[in-house]
Image (cartoon, rainbow, N blue to C red):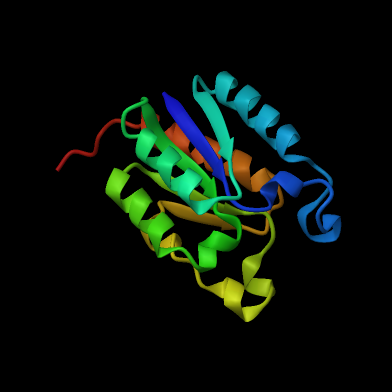
Length: 150
């Protein structure tokens, strides 16, 4: 089973950008850890980051055909602005977990609204980079669970 981890604008600066908020781990550290954790859970984890909304949308669309079963996404600032990103996820209709390293609800008011949360299986905020691991474990359990009987 394949999980795609998507990171939006400015997340390439992890480890150097506002470490008091986002911590010292780099995006490469986070991605390496997720690939290793995924392997231990029997999952193939691939990662993609872009500072460009269109590139993220193109990658979401490609997931329809490449075997991706679910997404972990930290949309960065696009969380609060991008209807187009939300529509791309809705159009592909794969499960997703939204992750935010900081607790967006303790920050500026404009960060309190997410266009993605309404279509997400879950939202994890404020756990630092550990939130990605929690999302991965959740999706591993969800994807391996037997279908619900009606």
